[in-house]
Image (tube, rainbow over all chains, first blue to last red; front, side, top):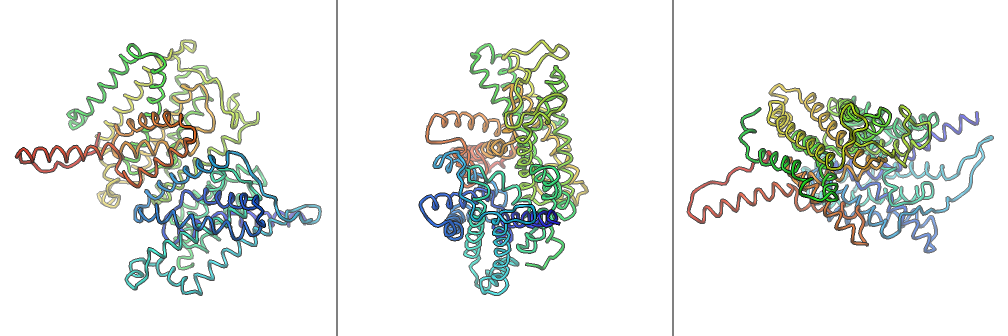
Length: 288
Length: 348
């Protein structure tokens, strides 16, 4: 019984983990159909923001919840202005340019902070479930994954900004004709997506530790989740994170974490063979 | 062979330059430089693999390193366990090509869009890199050869004369052999591109819907093109492994895929000569940059990649070619000779 609870909680944690890794990328992809290849390095930047600011004496929660999203969000806006903006409509070029950015960031951060793992203390201790122990921080991750999805949903559904965003998503030309500055919408979207990525990076920092090359071990999961989910931000991310997270966690239990990743890829390839536009390309088409 | 190919002076000039280098290189140039050039030759074969599938099949693979690494590991394992290197060289082409068919089936028969294709190929490379790094323990061995995890596989044999496992090639012979491989790959690709098959794949690159409406099976064509590129990448991986006599999981790294992309972008998509020049230029540049202390290779590569995409999207060779043709036309106009702007072809 205890073991079953632990397994179930681990499954939910794996799903939450994928949601956190993918949410920021999914927001950008859903709106602009641009995949940010430097996503892993945006996560890394969020992590370093937390490491540096807690090192300077800032409260850890302030660093994670406020500074990390702020810094990465602003950085995202700058990147959008300087790079992504030049390449709208040239999808592959934007992939290549952001890949260049990713290497530039890894190299740059290595030059500044050195190639060593820097850690942040994991807040809270563990909680006992029967004869097993589980870190409380897992529940924090699950809470924030749910909170991010809820917040994005609420903004898209109930606010004027969300209405404008949905209009731009559905038909950018029409939206522009009706007087919406789609350029600004894209900039804001990229900024918000980056901020969410920064928040995720900050939240993951206590778990993964922070290294310049940490992005490489995380982006695979982010990319797979987003492209398997398809263009709808919330339904897509949630459905693909649920499918992929539970399968990879089951494989991890059975064979180890590296095979969990490999299983993720195999499942995603099979899903994409059947649903090339991702899950929300055919099912839940009208969903958010 | 196509008439257009035999009549193309660029093709013959390239082959002759290659043959002259092959024969005269080790005689005229000192050994250290020859070994440096050998490295360029190996990487040129790798660059050609991407130049072909991207420039002449319209397939932008972000994971060419997956096949490079697969070929390198296939060669390392089979040559150490067999003792002879002839069959391993064949395997280093066949195994990645077979994997290319399998992956290509999922991607092209699923009709993935370009962006998805890029992401999938990249993720495949990442997973290979993770898996290869993970194989440290003694339980990870194939045919008695330990994969060694992040330590890699040491003491990979040099190429030997077929059937004589002890007759290893010396560095000059190795250079000649690799140069020969490069020339053969170049000629084979040129013939393939000039053939009906190559014309169809260029047609698919230009307009998939039109090619499909003309009755060509674009999915099958793309899988074949992708598999050929994968095989060549694998072969270059094997050459890399035997040149270094050592291979580690960095063969699967993102940096390796990125380098291939940069060579092709710098040289120009849709040419075979350009990427080779890209290899020489970029490797030379990295060597020079390596002496500057406050820079590391990733910063340099990343910066070059961004500049190429943002400022020189067509690459150097096509840019200079169109500039040269424009200049030539201007000069002729200035002399009062009539002549329209010649259309830029990019088939060399």
